[in-house]
Amino acid sequence: MIKPRILIVEDEMALASVLRDYLLRDGMAVDLLTEGSHAVETALGTPHDLVILDLMLPRVDGLSICRQLRQRSDVPIIITTARVEEIDRLLGLELGADDYVCKPYSPRELVARVRAVLRRRPVGGGTAKPEPAARLQIDPDAWRVTLDGVDLALTRREFSLLAALAARPGRVFSRDQLLTLAFPDDTEVFDRTIDSHIRNIRRKIHATTDWEPIRSVYGVGYAYDG
Image 1: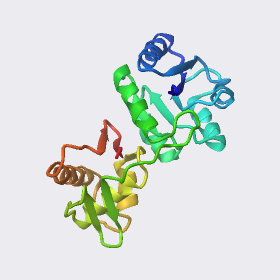
Image 2: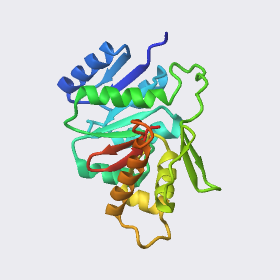
Image 3: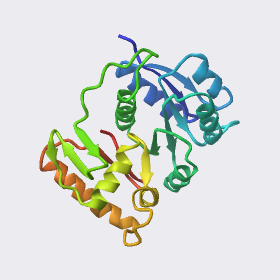
Image 4: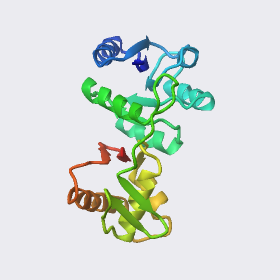
């Protein structure tokens, strides 16, 4: 079995060491950098399955590293930051990170996030195993969503919102972004209306199963992890 190889780029050595220990205990191989100068070369030189990237780094900041990586690779990236307000700006910049985590965070939570991202990607450059048929089927022509064959009976707005999230699995969207993506011409939908529609979608999903495909990201918005 191939171990996922994770690159941590984090200048807080105590935090980085704890996170490395958690990842190692979870069966992953880990490389660690405490500044950003060689992050891109390290990430690409020895193929990594995921990069955990802090924003505030000495020499080369995390934003620059993320941009450079995205120009040359589709390696999954989880960005960490101590500033909640920074995440809104990151989302607007469309950097292409797969997830965003605010400090202080629980190492267990971050390991769970790593696992969630890796489930959507083949590890070690191998061929991905065939995926089973998706539990959630979205039919844009019929404006219909079924879960395990059961029609969820979503409203038009609920359908638009779920379809926008599911189009980019794992991607974290702010409420403003979801307004633009799901309701570009609907002037009666506001940012906080998004929360109400998400609650309704979850309620209809939970009427069929306890599966939770929509993840709330505190202070930011939502992501679809189906």
